[in-house]
Amino acid sequence: MVIRIDDAGWGDLIGGCLLGFLRQETGEYVVKLIDVSHFQPPNFIRKTYLEEALRLAKEALKELRVTKEEEIEICTGSVLSEIRLTLMEEGYKVKPTHIEGELQDLVENSLLDYYADLGVPRENLTVESGRDRFYVLLRWVMEDLERREKFVKTGWNSWNNKWRYWRPKKKNFGNRKTSL
Image (cartoon, rainbow, N blue to C red; front, side, top):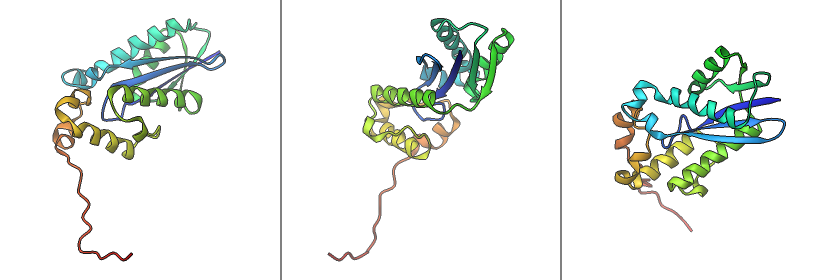
């Protein structure tokens, strides 16, 4: 049997980070949340998200009844580094790898459901992370900064130095004439 572990949400502006665990052969899926508080001061600077990721991984592996005879494929993402190291030290068969396919789809869709639970309109989100999703989330936060900033990964230097003061540019169409 093969257990696969992946993360989602690490690079997104809001929310915590999800960890997905999949037993490939049976389709058993467990998802865990590293709370956003681990990505806010003072926890972020202390990297408490690494300890929390390990705690959640041990919880999930226990739920899945994983044995040391099973291979564990773990994404190479930095939030999973403590999990990889500790499980190797404990004698598990750990294989760092790039995760694609079923688990990636499951954990990314779980992430979008989590964002929807926070109040982000689901129809505005796609599973592809990156610039477009970043700006969807940023616009959502800025619509009500006072109430939504608690969902932001404020431990990032860029939040206080740049994004907290960002406002969408207004489209200026100048004196362009249009014909009908």
